[in-house]
Amino acid sequence: MSTTAPATHMSSHSGGLKRTLGFVDLVAYGLAYIALVVPLTSLGFVWGASDGLIATSYAIGSICMYFTAQSYATMSREVSSAGSVYGFARMSLGNRWGFLAGWVILLDYLLIPALVFALMSVGMELLIPQIGRGTWIGIVAVITLAINWFGIKVTSKVSAMSVLAQFVIVAVVVVLAIMALRGGAGNGALTAKPFIGESSISWSHIFSGASIAVMAFLGFDAISTLSEETKDANDKGLIGRAIMAVLVIAGVLFMFITWVLGNLMPAIHMQDPATAIFDLLGQTVGPWAPTALAWALAIAVGFTNTMPMLAGVSRVLFAMGRDHQLPAIFGTLHAGTGVPRVALLASTAVSTTIALILKDQVDILASLVSLGALSGFAMLHISVIVHFKNSPQRSWFFHLMAPVLGLLVVFAVLTGMHEAAIWTGVVWLSLGIVYGTYLGRRGRVVMDV
Image (cartoon, rainbow, N blue to C red; front, side, top):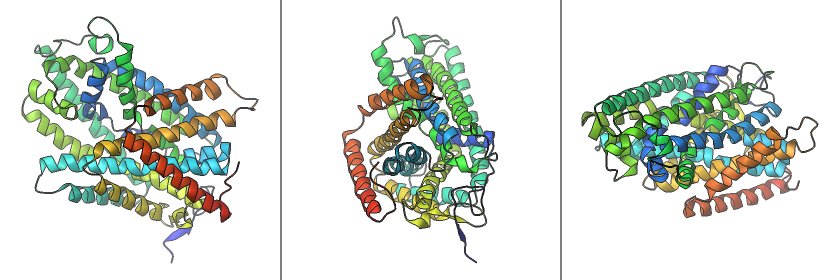
């Protein structure tokens, strides 16, 4: 018996993606994808860019991301597709732009697991130097693939446990920070300084910090890749509600974390922003705290954070393969689990290879991830504007103002991208145009709109 079954466009048909996910599953998936511990690991970067106005930077960052979340919620009610931005743009802008939207979002979805693989390998090499980065990348990749292999329900359960573990880690760090503040460290109390500064608000510093803070929210959009795996196919607003819930939970939690830690940061002299949280705990809590946090992050986050990422990219590959925009083999599903195993294997192999190549150039890899995500966001906002331009249900705010503001945020952040990332993005887009033209000549995609 064959291990794969051809997929159909409607997941409710035989051979389609299995509908097993509810609202809580989707929220857990989104929170696991974002990683609630991000404000800890990016603390030094946002603190330095915002000149101490770190909590306000996260507040502005969450507001900026609201416009993108709103566009995702809007389009997910119109199109229920595992292809996310690819499916949205294909319906609104036509086959050509739909293909290119899927192509650019792949840059994000294929590279973000590679980034986490690389970051994980750096941390584990520090904890266990006898094992090199390349070996750690392979170990994490195999564990992630094994869990995703058995279906999205298994992945969602592990994601839920990961989110719970991250809540515990964050809670412990915050409690330790508050105890240090009560002992007289930093500002000596929970003041408003991380929001308003010492005397006046510097908006230039706030927006500089916000341009970095918005990166902490990247990933909530991946919930839209599970559109064909929700329990209720008729609940068109479920994906949108889950996306908004993830953004609100993350936004409030990130502001709270940075408010507490922002009051403690004046206690240290920061030399390396990449290790700020470890320096902060080591100097204000005790020498044992940085090591404990490093192990907690490695076990509770590093080995699980890539699961939803690989699940998401495999769904995009599946949708594009199903539509013959990529090799049709990607559009097949395992007959028993309903998992796009070929797409999952391919995405894991590509992400692992990239991580091995760029394991010592994490900064460039991070910029490439951001470039792919932001390019996909831009296509999303354009899709909303075009789709509703002549609709009698058109809303001035949701269908015009929100996507326009979202585009402005995207372009503002893009201006700060690493030059190497920009050129890589240009090359990637050029390859997509060439490949799309080839598909057009084969009759598999119409390259004119």
